[in-house]
Length: 362
Image (cartoon, rainbow, N blue to C red; front, side):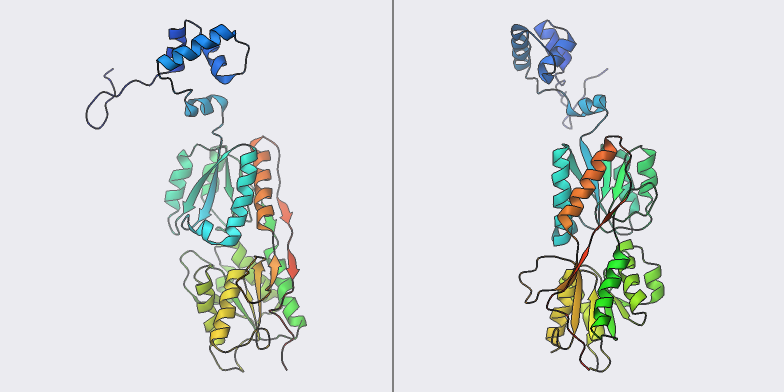
């Protein structure tokens, strides 16, 4: 067989293997392997001879890929996020989830392989998952309710866990009662006397534009958490006007809020339920630009329980501990990778009343 060559046509030097080291040291391959693994008794003089041979041959150590294949594990967990990879770090709640997950993976120990699904391009993600060397797959954030990736991952025999999506009996979840938590928040507002309620949702579908959403749009939403939170609002306030934001950014919340607030005072809502704290901050900023006082003229609520020290309010919100959620996902995938039977778990939330809600004005 001809020698392998690099792009210039020159022959590439052959990789030195452990077998070469063993031959140079005059020991068996198994003895040389024990020296490098440290897992068995080897005479000090023999070990010194093996290390000297390795130094003479510039042996870099065992091939990590070959080692992982022999052990039947890659030492890596694939973590799938929606949109650009940067989005997973721009959103403070997403960062907290990823931080908690990373801490648990460190303890296994396992590395984190980040994979991103570009909206409308499942093929790219499927191609990556088809060849990724990983021991488990985690869907830690918002994602589509149905996902062709599940069949592929299950077909490879790799454990999967999610945080509410994909919705599939083969995917154990760390699950928040999105609908129930959102309904509880809406009931808080109706208890304060609010009857004209607006709702700003996260994107309901990939590539969403800021727009008024109908009940049918909510029912057909691709993203399960956005759908659940919107249904919770409509369960309590079926006449609520729903506007879909194009993203989770504060600016998107401001744009969506203007569709609800930039109208005659007697027509605009007296309260707005936002599906995230950042969207709620956008609603508050839009209200300020329109001369609408919070909470005197408008009550605003969020979801997540973020620390927003730059916001001049203590936001009324649904609190979910992102780091604890990430840790729970890490613990679940660790047990699944260890061959243990795992099942979905409920993750708690708590309604926290702040200074952005008040009794509706008569």
